[in-house]
Amino acid sequence: MSNPAVSNFKPRRRGIRLLASVSVALIALGLTSCSTSSDGDDGAPAGESTTSETRVISTDRGDVTVPADPQRIAVLSAGFAGYLYTLDAPIAITDTRLLGVTNLDGGFPPQWAEKAKAQGTKELPAGEALNIEAIAQADPDLIIGGGQGYSAVLANDAYDQLAAIAPTVLIPSSVNTWQGELEAVADAAGEADKVDGLLQAYEDKVAQVSDAITVPGSPVAYLLSLSTNEPSFIPQTAALPTLLSEVGFEADDIITKAGNPELYGSGDSFIVSPELLGSVATAPVMFVVPVAGRTLDELKQDPAYAGLPAFSDNKVYELPATSYRPDYDGVMSTLDTIQQTFAS
Image (cartoon, rainbow, N blue to C red):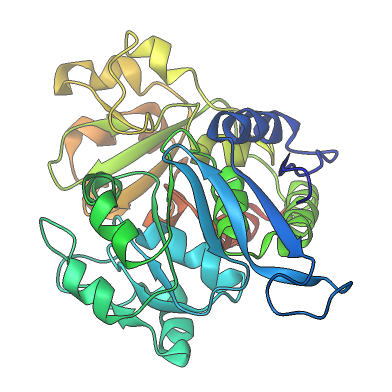
């Protein structure tokens, strides 16, 4: 057996801070794999060796033996499906609930609906618990879940049932950058050799966008528009502000302005009282991300927001929900939107 090695991608001239945090997350995860060979004990002629059809993945749940080339993957978090479609991995069944994009009514998220239909992927019925029967009927040879959000909790609670169906790899919530998720999912699915090329394409896109835009000012705040209508913000440490800092958008230290509030979920949002909105949202530039909440045009009609500096100076811009917790395609499409919006 070859020595297990932690997967790493090479830092390039941009994104060093991001990639460093990813490496730490991957080391904490201990996500490693190894291939094995045999010396005839699997039926090969004596003296010849054959490559094993399985690999070993080290996870928080222990070592998991997975197919080297899985053909029917069950995906328990819609946030991971996009990565797998980008990697051209075969998905037999997947969760379809993508925050701010789809809901319990079903239907594939638009950004990968065509790929899902082309593969014949089935929708995993949504509910308050995982539909174990539907997963079993899909006859997967690999199950991938975990990550962020409610679906990760469901997968963790049902791990023993899932592992009885097929090898199950749960990506922990500590891997909370899109680079870390991409690498972890690709390693589990046997597609790690494609990651470096995707990251290079990202670095090229960052360079292209940086050279093509004029940033309208700084610092920048990120408002999360939720269905509750509570003033919600994305902290400067989260995925979207970190991404846009790579192309010149300096994020406001909104956590300090809000008095170091409790961060919800995986640490990528927090809520302030309406009374504090005016003292927190003082940045001269703002992005609004509607996630099942009011659009930018609707917020402009609300006096509580209309009087904020970015709103009154007409330096507030809307980004799609897919930019909030972006997968690889979400990152690339967000950069395209930024280039189109702020082209010099």
